Image 1 (cartoon, rainbow, N blue to C red):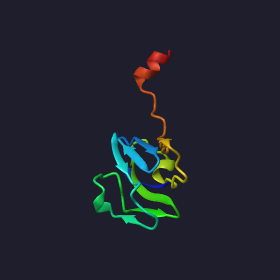
Image 2: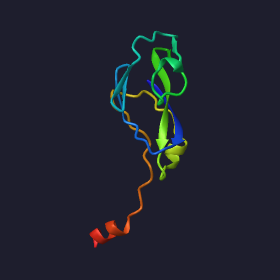
Image 3: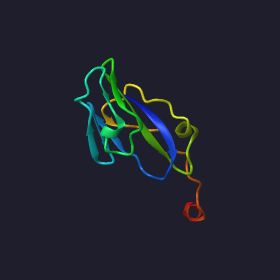
Image 4: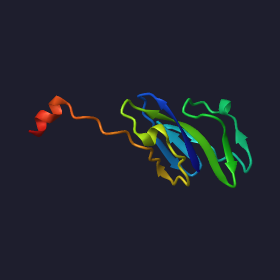
Length: 111
């Protein structure tokens, strides 16, 4: 599976788990196993705002694009994400944001 990422500034959380041709996005399953070689599933057929564009199966591999929510402290890797190639089963790892600065309260707890 190839997952392309479209960065969008938002504070939403994207949690994705891949098992075979099924993606579980924030607890909702999307099974793409019926998509055959050379087939295309149009965006309108997917009832989720996380998908951008169509889903294709090319050379036996699913290719799709997901919105990547970028928090206020987004990193360069989030702002300019590279496609995730050969995504394996399990939790999908996305680029991480920059660390949040320590607050005065957190600094007090360190001392």
